[in-house]
Image (cartoon, rainbow, N blue to C red):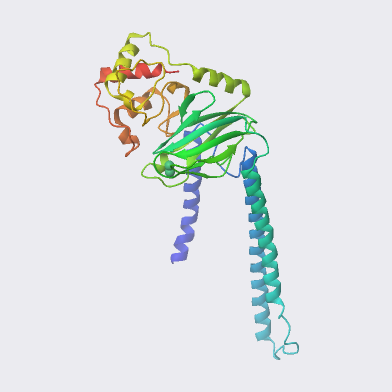
Length: 347
Ligand code: CUA
């Protein structure tokens, strides 16, 4: 009865699994983040390792099942036969030796391939073209381009075909940096710097995800790696290096005052904004917003970056990400509209 019910549930489970995969693909600008669809050398090595282990696993499974059936058939024949087959009592004594020998050989091959893959992934051949610092926080990613002095959040732009060295750390608890199509997981640990080198062989948007449980919003701690042509990357870098322009539109000008007076500037940096009256601690609690509108998403790749989502996030972030540091802002509707008008100018 129970087995019948379980069998009936299998098609339903498959449909649910497929529909959830479609959901990921349609709400995110990124490709489906599968480690078996690698787009960089490190991920390609890891995918090869996975296929080799699957091949060995499948072969051994089939061998064991085959031997099991052979033994069952033999047992049946032996009970059906009238005379016991005791002419050769030593028959089959070498089987344990054979099984142990085969296990050792298979394990040695898989272990050797593992060590080789680790060595290749840990020591990429080329000198890194770009260095980036990534600081994991509950629940977003701070990204610093040390050579250019720019800072962004949750979206890492890289040029295609160039090794990018990432220095990874965490601000609060242990997180894990994972872009399945570009590299394996790497822990981000407070007070420690771990490093990895990612490289994308094709332009595209690659979804990343925190892969270490880090609290209430662990599942909503995503990010995007945007791989661009060298020219597009340089244009992006040039734009990011500019400070935010002063708004000219009256609503946006009022919105800038709201930004300063409502407390946003305590946590969020906007380069070029004259906020000398704001007592800013060096602890950056929220993302740098200088070029907010150049990003595809807000709230760590949780929502598409548009006016409606921004309004919802500013007025009631706790509804979207309960437990995040972004407080509810009690703004009247006019102030909210003006603030949104100002945020729209941050290209
Ligand atoms: Cu950060 Cu999970």
